[in-house]
Length: 175
Image 1 (cartoon, helix red, strand yellow):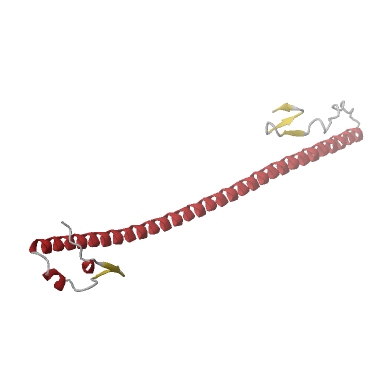
Image 2 (cartoon, helix red, strand yellow):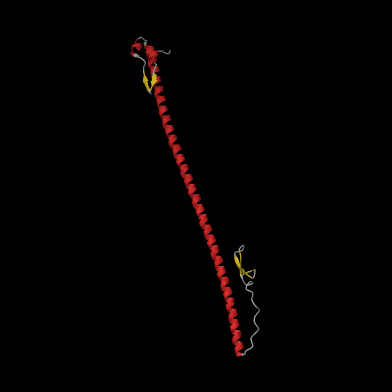
């Protein structure tokens, strides 16, 4: 049996329970069984309201936790992107430095080869001058000059740099 007292129905106003009218005068006219039923229903409503309020509070907490978690996730994602960008920049810088060092090394190697060619050419000139001076001395002393060696072609003795092998070669053959 359900007792219906319109004046005893709770009303929600800003999270609190407000009774529409005084229930004590209405309860006096009810039988003891009806009063017990009314009290039981009132307790059930209180429990339901408390449970609802606790659920609402838990929902607010869960939403707050979710919001905090989402913010932390977003922050971590941003940090990861920044770290990836930093790593990419560092890699590019490393690549640039490596490329510069390779170019410097190649230039240095080419300069050394050029210097060797120049020194070789100077040496050949000095050898010819020495041979000419030696021949002049022999002529002055009246000694028969020996047969001169066949002329050396500087171009044939140029050290050729084979870029594909990265080994210097002489006369087109690998040393």
